[in-house]
Length: 411
Length: 82
Image (cartoon, rainbow over all chains, first blue to last red; front, top):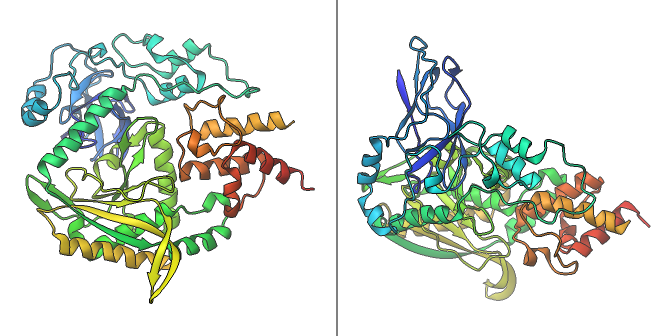
């Protein structure tokens, strides 16, 4: 018998709203199954269960916002199945006090606004009504303003059926004129997302003594190999340069493992697994998330590319899985070909480092006493000085450089 | 004919970058200067064009797709080889 708790889906998350239950009492679940959808300030997350068993009791109803750590359901062997689901209640959970006490510093730093948690299930106190991801997507496609919809279940979330009714239900005809603008998904409060990111980044800078290293990487070999490889592949199987960067970082961790893992309450916890978080922008001021590609070191470039494409698509549709949010052991941030020369990232707590890559630019490159031109990337490392020092950090960056000089070995 | 083609291309662009103002796009200006898209979006856009029009797009041709006018010209030429 175990309680299934509201997971922490990011360093900035303090609470989440239960948007949808995908299981009911009596259902058999196995570890990794998605059992619920939770709305955080950044996105809707598919929450996976950590244990196998039978859902015995649902504790939190749809539409309720609860702090991280609140029991959501009870999973057992099936002997204590309770079918009734609690009605939305107005009384704040006792866990609310603990969550606030646990972060007195964060509270003092952030402006005195109700960023989280909100006890009232109808949620207008935080200005947001829970919306299921399918409903959100349909609303976006049909140009329906979510704030005009009243959920059919009072105090509950807006579901697909509510949006279909509001949109008139007919399937959209193939466009004869380009849509002026597909409607922005309503209900995702950009201001509160900003506050959440601000809290996490402030905490990082307050608690983690960062040191920074920079190194220029000649990207010519990697670029040439990519061009040759992609020329032989159909468009759906081509690789982006980011896949090489992800694999190189993951393999470099094996040589300098203290760049990987977590520092919790000042103590370093190494991680055998390497799950590289990839920073993905949510566009149009929407902030940044850095979900994990699991076991990056063990995957082929093709597998990493598939994972990356899938991740970007789901992230921008506001749909991530809880393990992707909580599992990164190290993060990579890349500014792409239109970005600036270098980026020195801020470590995502409780990780211990973040690797940055600037845009690949043609620059003068001196080699063997001769001057030529090569595509060069500024690589950077921001690392936790409680866990490692510059000597080890330098070795890490040098290893990444070395790996990128032999791209065919990364495949 | 070319306008119908342009509308189809705009629609594909819209699926790659939802929430974008597509009406005001200038035909001869780099798309990446006008809307917030990255290399993943360009790849997905090219995949969309490949699927919709059944044309092969070698990586070397991506630079021809960076403006709307360039896209229309490229797709047109591929569909009606001279």
